[in-house]
Image 1 (cartoon, helix red, strand yellow):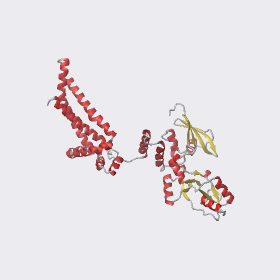
Image 2: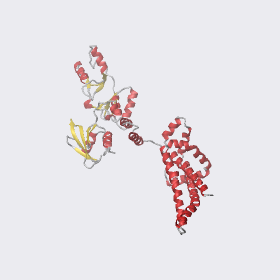
Image 3: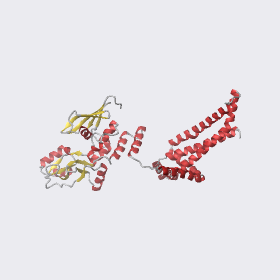
Image 4: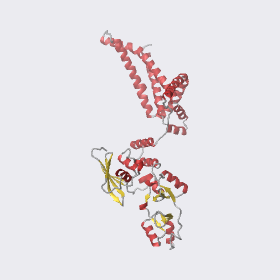
Length: 433
């Protein structure tokens, strides 16, 4: 063949090799979720892509057989077509020399290899990585045809590879389990690209954390619970309701660990407007309250609220003592943050570049996110910043007590009746942001 004809053959081989490289990356990188969405939209080709992905060894074998055969053929054609031409050019430039033929062979090898690397490998693969699902549905029919033509060869090589993996005890079945880390990484990438707002990122992360956070994260602790006593007279009841305008109140027999139920403020208001007595022992209807253990997760609590058609729950510990109360609104605040309560004081306030003021009841997950920490020591033993300090200090902290961890100093700056109210977190010198 003439030089021109050989060049046409090489160009054809480069194009065919580029197609198989294109197909390999597209079929391997296509995401199952996106393909399922395309199937629901009526694209039958996406179903064929999913079927191929169930047996990745099949299409990888087709691709590799084709690529290797084309690469060998391209080398043969390139050597026959280009080596004499390049050697002749070198002869005209440098005259007769023993190294001319070898140099021509090397130059033809470099030229053909460069053509295959750039146009048959790098460029098609980068394009396929940019639009993997679109590429996959585009090439699935041609790859299916190649599979049918090369089926005996494909089954032989795929069987040999599968058998070797079995002998080595290597698991090759593809798993498409999506974990929280996978979703979190995608959400972080979406936020970085501007597709998601920061508030939307926090909302998505909080949804997943409902399964790990217990009800104590969202509760009103027992010391802050305003309750009505059966022993209270009308004036005492009216004073409590006036000072603390909640929609529901616990009703207790003298003390908080003896809960009778709850009453709704609207019932008390109705009787007050009608100038009727509001004694808890006689006139008012005290309703049964939902009691839950303090180990219940927020996700499980939402299910309890749904089943019982209630929105208030009493939290008890293993000794049947009241830990606090939690409402549906508390869970929504935990889930949606400032979207529900834009005027709620933040639990973590950044004072300057190297320090933060943190509320003692701040969940450790929020602290790790704010300080970019991967983990805290033995964090399964506590749930809040106050718990972290008590665990580290091995005592009830007092003001100015501090611990150091991961380049940060955690100092107690405010105590309220043995409860850690405020913690100052300072980045130690030499630590970068």
